[in-house]
Image (cartoon, rainbow, N blue to C red; front, side, top):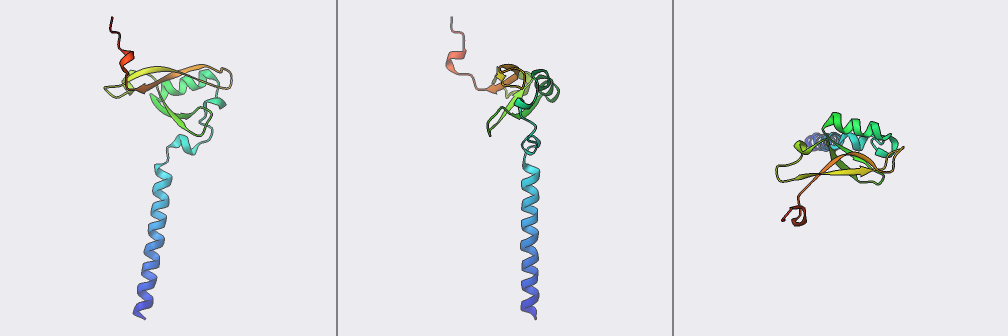
Length: 113
């Protein structure tokens, strides 16, 4: 009888751990990954630009499976990063200036003149 009770408790613990893990995975996924409508190709250029401006920094899809981080200005980047203007395809514009992306500067980015 004690062996049966121990088995039931282990089973409950395993089920509880699996549910907790599933909940963590769901909550850890960014909202933009959960929403397939967060693709720039489904928005008009003005909508995409306004979304980046309103959020400050946001992950959006630009056509492939990968997500890209866009920011409204340099203040959303790390101290050592620069903001580079990004053009992405939208529903009405193949090269919409949606905002910026943060990146580490390369040697060629510095003006040595």
